[in-house]
Length: 304
Image (cartoon, rainbow, N blue to C red; front, side, top):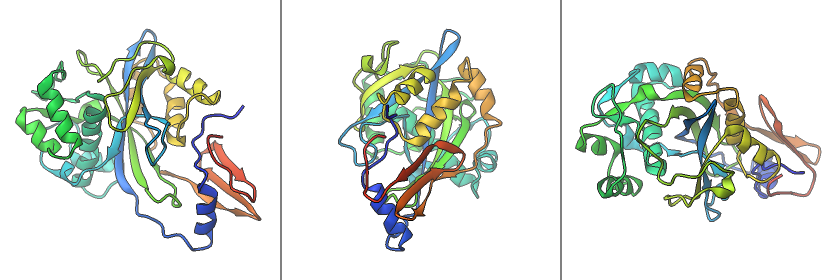
């Protein structure tokens, strides 16, 4: 049975064009995504969103809250936890401003897409409830880019809690994709008292609930092992970074354990390699053999 690996039908042609020097390589845009975790007995659950089928990129695939860095994410904010300089070293970027933008993007996107805010009125507190019309109006303004995240935090006198994030992985979109992202994956625990925009029951993704997002149509909390099993059965469509990070989470029995493990995670970027072997297209992700594809002369596509 085929698994749920997302694989667009146009990729073989684009890989051949790249190999022939006929394809311009786009510069990847920086992005951040967050594996939001909560305790579930002696294991953990991760919050996932199913991307709308109408999305140009990975429509129908399950993913985590996340998105591109907004240039305004570099604007000054009240900050708690490791400083931007320390984050720059951890994330492998040149300047504290770049690191701040990535961390801010992670916190901002989690609020925009999941309604969960890793910030509080003091350096050692977190807001307990982000529901209500005023919170929703601010979230919508952030999504529409009518409000910067720095302005949002300042208007509520909130401190960004960078210490609640753990850097987990880094993946870069393949060179043959027209829309490319250099994405840092973080882990974070669901703060006490907060809830995601739509709480899903403790069932398989089919039992999820509609997501309050312009990019997603379903929201679910699910055990990483269950989500990975759904992928293996071909029931859940995922991009390689998503299923790869899910598999790594199955080793931890609590959000705290995952956060502690994040300190030692290797953040060397994973970038797909693509080339030709005779008339076959060969696509691989270094260190992740399960995603290797060998495509014969005629293009093939869909989930495989």
